[in-house]
Image (tube, rainbow, N blue to C red; front, side, top):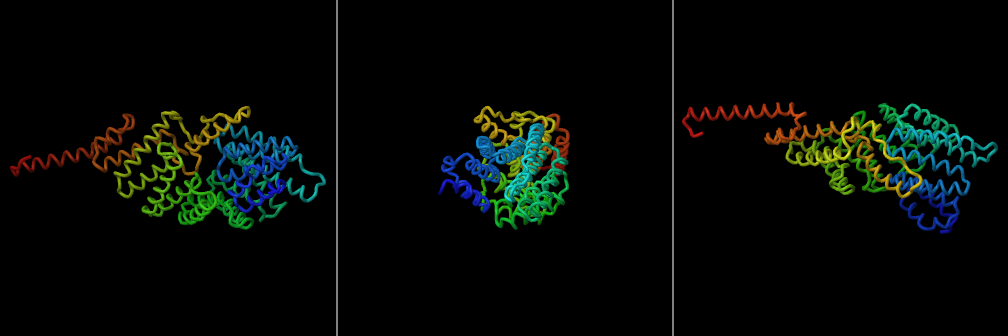
Length: 455
C-alpha cells in the first residue's frame, strides 16, 4: 500500500465500520508516514479503540496524536485529540473532581478552537472548522456529564446540535453525537422518554448515513436502557436483540458492553415473568464474566446476585445459596480492601490518582487499574454497586442468603450468619420457626404419651 494512501484507507475502513480491518491496516506502515499523516492515522485508530471500549489504548494513541500534531503544527488535529482525551479520561476515572478539572481545560481548548475560524476560507476549510467546533462542543459536553454538570453539558450539546443542523443539515452525520450525548444527559436527569427520543434519533442517523455500522451500538444501548427505565420491557428486549447482533458481528462477545446487554435482557425477562429465559441469560452472563475476569473478581458480584435471585424465585434455593455465598464473599473482600465509604455512588471521596504526564508507563498501569476500579463501583448502568453503599449491599446479600437457609430448614446457619448489629429481624424469623417446630414436637410427644407410644 502506498504510504500516502494509508490514512485515507483507514478513514474509509472506519466509515464502513470495518474496525478490525482498520486496525490491521495500520500495522507497521504508519511509522513510515510523515508526522501529519501519522497523526491522522492514529486519530482514526484512537476513535476505533474508543468505540471498542479499549479506553487505555485510546488514551495512549491520543497522546501520540497530540505530540505528532504539535511537532507538525497541525493545530486542529492537536485540539481535537486533546478534547477527546479529556472526555475519555473522565469516562475512565468516574471522578467528579477530576472531571471538573478536565472540563475546565476543555473550555480553554474550545476557546482556542473558536480562534481558528477561517476569515475567508474555502468550503472545505470552513466545513473542517465547523466539524471540529461541533466535535469540541460534544466532547466538552460529555466531560461535563462526568463532572456532574448536567445543565452545562446539555447547553453545550444543544448548541452543537443546532450548529450541526444549521451548517450540515438535520440528517447529517454531525448530528449523531449531539443526539447520543443528549440521550445520556436526559437519562441521568431521569427524563427517560426524552432520552429515548434522542437515542432513537441517533440510531436513525447512523443507519441513514452509514447503514449497518458499529456506531449504532451506543445509540441502541441508550435506547434499550431508556425503555428498561420506563418499564417498556418488550421494547427493551427487542432493542437488546438488535444490539446483541451488532456487538457480536463487529466487536465480539468478550467485552463489557455485551455483558451489559445480557444484563438488560435478563431484567426484561424477569419483569415479563419469563424466569426460565431469565435464568438462561443470567447463566450466560455469569459464565462470560468468569471467562473475562476470573472467578474471584469483584466484577462478578452483579451477575452472581442476578442468577441467585432468579434461582431463589424459581424455588431452587440450594443452588441460589451457592451464588449468594460467592457474591457475599466477594463483597466482604472488596469491603476489606477499600473500607466502607458512606456512599460509593457519589464517588466524591474516591478520586483515583490523576494521570502523570511525566511517566507514560505509569500512566498506562494506572489506567488499567483505575478502569477496573471504576467498573467495580458502578461504571455500567444497572450495576448493583451504583446507588448503593457496600454496607447496604453486604446487608442485602446476608439477608437473602439467610432466607435461603431458612427455606431449607438450616435454622442455625441462618442465625449464625447475621452479625450481631443486623440480627434482630432474622432472629425473629428463626425464633418463630423454632417455636413452631418445638410446638409440633411437644404436641407429638404429648400425643405419643396419651397413646402409650414410645417417644
